[in-house]
Image (cartoon, rainbow, N blue to C red; front, side, top):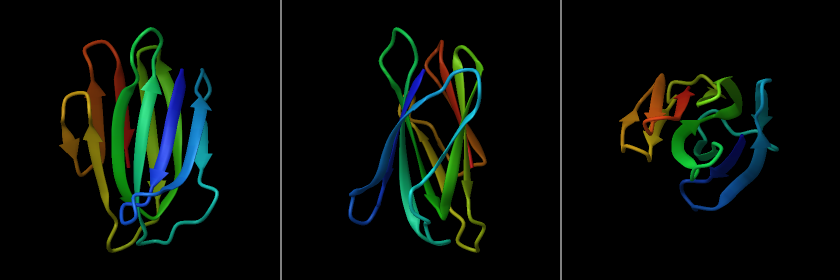
Length: 121
């Protein structure tokens, strides 16, 4: 499956990075090209291209982004584990566009009936 990942600066709404990541049986980790400050905010836009369906979309607002690891444990589920710096202002807000659910962590599962994205931070 293909994961489309975009890191967006929430103040300027400009992209910080963009990547197209192929996730098969082995976990894949993405690290940003630059280091984000401990209290620096970033919006992660995630679109997952499961076979034979429109991409599922989710987002995560985090501070101090370090990396995200994608794991495909089941053919119909993708796990996305976000690592970010620990600080007093540690922020993590997760949003699922499939059903409108949201969470301040640590995890959120986005279901569409058959497929799932599980995001943790």
